[in-house]
Picture 1: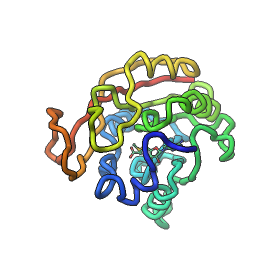
Picture 2: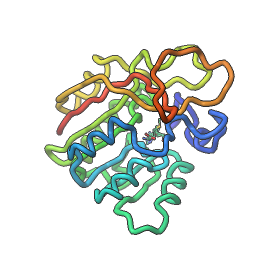
Picture 3: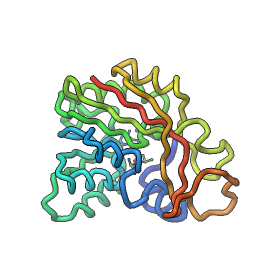
Picture 4: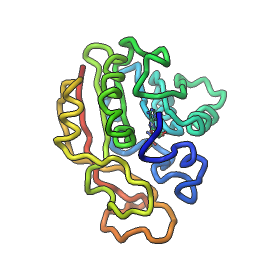
Length: 223
Ligand SMILES: C[S@@+](CC[C@H](N)C(=O)[O-])C[C@H]1O[C@@H](n2cnc3c(N)ncnc32)[C@H](O)[C@@H]1O
């Protein structure tokens, strides 16, 4: 699939942000870490759009069984390398989340699907196929957790590629076409802003680790 957001392999090879992409923070997003700590993640888990695998690996280290899939070969190679030859219950598959059946993942098998900033990374016209695809791969009763940037997360004049930001109603309506939406609440995505010139001024909170908190929504749904 062609992306209208960015060339993901180029991002992971350091060609877009003058270094690693801003979302590579070396640990799971805090909003997702909170869900894990609260015991809200049931195995087996699908980490869809897993990037370089920090969330999948953290889940596996905590004893979860997880499949990470990502369209970027560069990201999946980094994830596989990180997992190394440790005996982790994480596996990584390169492929397109809008067609999980093509990866042999079309049947119900996951009890939790975690979308950590994939939804806003998809082209608008891929959203429905994507939500149908992950729904088909979910067991009855499975949970979906989706962390997505809101429209105020990035300025339109950003020198970096701007994802397909959402409003509350937009993401709710899109997900509700396939899933039963339970909650949607304000959240944030922690990023390490790139060291590039012309980054617009912002007044977002930057924490003690130097991570900037960009506005997001955390949606929870079930099948
Ligand atoms: C903003 S990154 C987030 C990565 C990871 N979830 C994290 O939090 O670090 C979005 C990811 O979605 C992946 N992606 C984009 N389109 C995809 C698709 N159609 N199928 C699977 N992965 C996709 C990209 O390669 C990228 O790794």
